[in-house]
Picture (cartoon, rainbow, N blue to C red):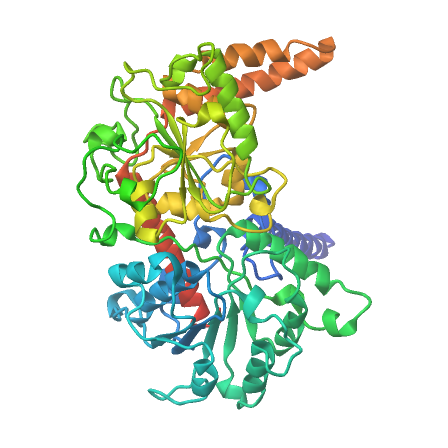
Amino acid sequence: MNRLPNRLLLAALLVVVFFTLVIWYKDIDLVNNLNPSRLAPSLDFSQSVSSPQSSLSCSTVKPHLKGEKPLSEIRAIPQKRQRVAVASTFGFHYDVYLALAWTMKRVMSRLPNQALHDLGGNGTVAVYAPADFHFGFGKIVDALGLYTGEVKDPDTLFDEVDEIKDGHKIDLIVLGTCEIDLRGGDDPNSWNQRLLRAWDSRKEDEKFMLVCIVHNVRDEGWQGYITEWARRGAIRFLPISQHVANSFKTAFLTRADNTQDSNIRLAGYEYLKLDTHVPILNISASNELWLRPSKSKDALSSDQTFDADDIENIESPSTDDDRLGIDSSWSADTYHNAIPGKKLSRAVIQGTFSTDRREYETIFKELTESLAEDASVWGYLPLKPGDQKYIVDPSESNPFNLYLLGSGGIDIPKELEDVVRVARDLSYSEFYRLMQTMDICVPAFNPENGYYRFQASSTMVMALQCNVPILATHRVRASYAYADDDRVMVTRPAVMSEVAALRALRMGNMTFFWNNYIHGSTFGTVNEQESRSLHATRAHDDLEKMMRAGWKRGDVGFEEFRNEVWLENERVVEKLLRDL
């Protein structure tokens, strides 16, 4: 008699259990979907960002794998901005903003492709800047076709900002150096106030977007003027390296939490967008300015300094396999052993000769000490009584030289006069011609300076443009994430100094350093020694990896690397043109 109700009760219970399991499964799926590792760590502040340590041992993760839209999806979205003005009052950084103009030109001239749902590009780019590009950069602009239009006077921007051409007013304004271009923002005649008035006077559907190329987080004199633009939702930022973007993000999030000033708190700093555009040029697109036939790269005078006339005698940088020390069958996946007898002989430090920025004094000290220990390792004769400087061993075909390319004054120790060579204030074409003959680039960053956090060094792009591998620590690779790539980097463990790494790579042997390292680690308590033993194991692994890869990197790897950077630059520009 009671079986039917019992069966109904059992059936109802089973239904309840079934739906409970369904809800439980969906909750699990929801939790998985909320896993931060699956979210886009873009620089839109409503989302999270990976820590710098996450890229220490791997190449840069492609943006679409981090949750951002891939390029193919972006190109299927209609373009919102058609008329771009790239403008600056500053007499420098033209190599940065004209590299962006070059990317803009490629993107906006792209033909549609219906099969790929690609709507194509359209629009124009105009440049408003001081026309006198220093150090002959105008020749580079023409040779590489970075920009083919007229470079207009900066103030002309305000005469043309509301002119209608091809059915559009200027709707995207890129400032080449916001630290300068927006400075003095309270003055009615400042660019900041003039641009705000132009923005406010437009109809809602005609507002332009302001893009700030930013260079140094610690330059705060102009940053107070961001608030007015942030309140309008009319500004976004474009640093040239990810670590600078991360530092700006931290600064903006700090302002977003401002509890004292409601104007700042309500401006929406946490929603400001940052992207990265890396200004690497395609200098191989032209050989008329710097790739000249010549005699020998060792034909340089052994004087401490040299000028453009000396550079004419340097070996033309090319794809010569002997210079690269690689087999002609080299591929991006394989590094070949060095040609017997080919040694690392030309290292370069590039940048302003400032001991605050770079460790020149430490490099000189360690190089002098290493020469005193064994000058023959570097291709020099030992000092004899009365000698003031090291001189090249006549039997050495590849003596080591350290080149300093930059500007300013610097004192070279007397004993290193034939070892260190200095080139000051070269034109861009002279610089490229000389840089391309180098075996390796030494960043020599001051560890306490801002090049790891607050600003980006030109050293990275200058070397990568010229197919010169960079001697870097994991910290450098983490900061300059776009270059976190074994095809272009030679990675040394931080326990090994730059000079020690150059010695080991030149000799193809790390034994000398390793013996000194082990000897210097055998002190302290038993527990400290055990800890050092663990560190030594990891250091030895890193050293072996460095030595196996060697210091040579092939042209094919550099070309592939740059193509990937340019494609990512295009993705960023496509976002700018669509307000994404």
